Length: 284
Image (cartoon, rainbow, N blue to C red; front, side):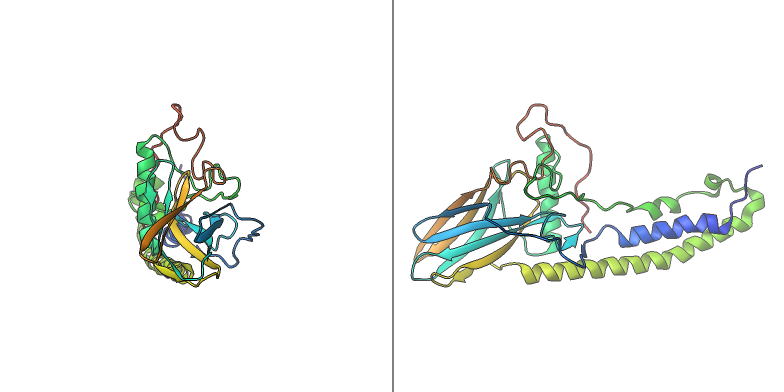
C-alpha cells in the first residue's frame, strides 16, 4: 500500500519552487563588490593628441563585480588629452571575435537584449559564448542564466496521479490545491522583490556609466565607465574623438590581453568548434 501524501510533503516543494521562480532570474546588487586591484593597464595607446588606457574589464563574477546575474561587460578606460585644448569623445566601440563592432548600451534591459543578439550571432558561427571563459586575466566564473527558474510552473501542471493520489485522498488533493493558492502570493512577492533588485541594478548602471559624447579638459586624465554587451574574444577598442573640425579614431588592441574572453575552447575559427543547443540569456 502506498504511503499517504501529507499536506506538508506536498505543499513544501510548491512553495519552495514559487520562491525560486519569484526570486531567481534577475540581477541583484552584491553587499560588497568583488575586490579588484589595478596594478597596470591591460593595454595603452596614444597619438599626438590623445592617450588612452584600457585599465580593466569587469566581467560577470570577476574582480570589480558589484552585482550578480549580469549580462554585460564594464570597460574601465583612462583618457587624457595631450594638447592644450579640449577633446570630445564622441563614441566608443569594441570589435569582437567576428570582426563586428559592438556599441555600448545605456540600461540593463538594453544590455541583455544586445547580449542575446551577440550570443545568437556566435551560435550561428558554431560557438557558444560563456561569460568569463578563457579569460584568465578576468578570473570570472558565473553562469549566464539563473538556476531554478520555472520550477513552480512545472509543479502547476502535475496531476493528483503524479503524486499517487486516488479517489480516497480527495482531501489531500484539496489541500494541494490550497497549497498552490498559498504559493501564488509568495510568487507575486518574489516577483516584486526581483523587480526591485533589477531597478536597483539599473540605477547603479546609470550612476556609474559615462554618457557620450563627453568633453575632456585639456591635459587632465578622466576615467570612463563603458557598459558593453558580453562581447566574446574582443580584438580592439575604438575611441572616436573630435579635435577641432576633424573626427579621428584611436584603436587599442586587446586581442592579447583578453584572448578568447567569453569563448569556450577550441578558439574561434577552429573547425572542431562545438555548437550548443543552450538558449541565450533570459530577458527579464
